[in-house]
Length: 455
Image (tube, rainbow, N blue to C red; front, top):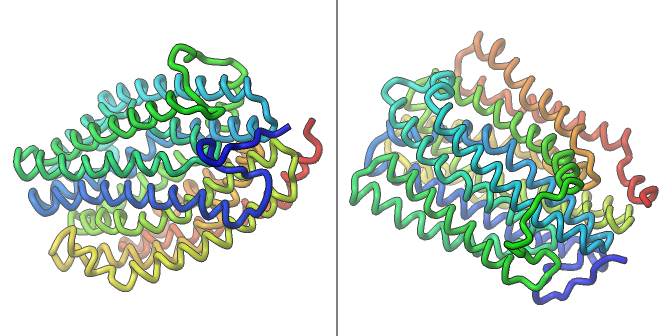
C-alpha cells in the first residue's frame, strides 16, 4: 500500500487525483530555485565585470562548463537517490525509504570530498587543455581551486534536495537557495569591491553561501516528521540502496557529464575566438540559463512523478505525467523567451558595456533559444525513462547525440568555417538527432509496461 502524505509536512500526493496542477506546483519552485541560483551565479560575473574587468569576467565564465563536467557525474547519483526513494514511497516501504535516505547523505559526503581533491590537483592541467588564454589563465586557476574547496557542501545540498523532491517538497530547497543567494551577493560585493580580492572573492562568497544552503537543508531533514526524516546517528551505507542508486545514478551522471563534456569542447572553441567572444558568451549563458531552468524543472518533475507511480504500479499516470510535463514545459519556456529575448542586448549591457561583448552575447542568445525547442523533449524523455529505472539507454543516446555529434561538428564544420554562429549551430543539430533517438527508445522499450508487470 502506498504512503498517504499529510499535506502540511510531507509534500504532495503524486499517486492520486489530478496531475497537471501538481506537476506545475512541483516544478515552479524548482524553476524559481534554478533561476535564483543562476541570478546569483550571474552576479559573480557581473560583479567582476564591473569592478575588475573583462579578463576576470572571462576567467569566471570559462570555468562554468568545466565545473559542470566534473560535478555532473557525482550529482547524477542524486538522481538515482531521487528515483529509488520515490519508487519506495510508491510501494509504501518505509524501512527501504529510511535506508535510502541515510545512504544518500553518506554518498554525498564521499563524492564531495573526492571532488574537493580532484579540483585542487587537476585545475591547471584541465584549464590548459581548454585553451584558456594566457592573460586569463592565472585568474581561472585561482577561481576554480577555491570554488572546489566548497564542493562537499555543493554535493550535499543536491542530495538533500533530491531527498526532499522525492516526497514532492521543492519549496524547502527554494527557501535555502534564497537565503544563501542573498548572502552570496552581499559577500561578492564586499570581497570584490571593498576587499579587492577579484575572482578569489567571488569564489569564497560562492563557497560560503553553498555551505549555508546545505546546512539549512540538513536542519530541515533532521527536524522533519516525514518519511524522509534524517537521523545523523543512523548514517550508514546500505548495500542494496547503493547498488540501486548507482545503477540509475551513474548512467544519469554520465549523461550530464557527456552534455557538459560537449560544452567544454565548445567553450574551448569559444576561447579560440578571443576574449571578447568569451566575455559575451559568459554573459549570455547567465541570461539564457534562466529559461533552461524552466525546461529542466519539468524533466525533474517527470522523473519523480513517474518514479512514484511506477512504484505504485500506475502505468497510465506515468504516461500522463510525461504528456503534461512536455506541454507545460513548452508553455512556460515560451513565456521566458518572450520576456528575455527581445531585451537581450539591454540585459547583457548590465554585465559589460563593451558593444562588441554585448553583440557576441546576443548572437549566442538567438541560437540557444531556438535550441530550447529540442531541449525540452530531451529533458522530459530522459526524465521519463529514468523514472522507470531505465538510465543507461538515455545516457548512451545522449553521449552519442549531444557529445559525439558536437565534437564531430567542431572538428569538421567549425574547423572549416571558424565563426561563432557556425559553432552554435552544433547545438541545434545534435539536439534534434538526440530527440529522435530518445523518442524511438520510448516507443521500442514501452517502459510503462514495467508498472504493470512488476511485483
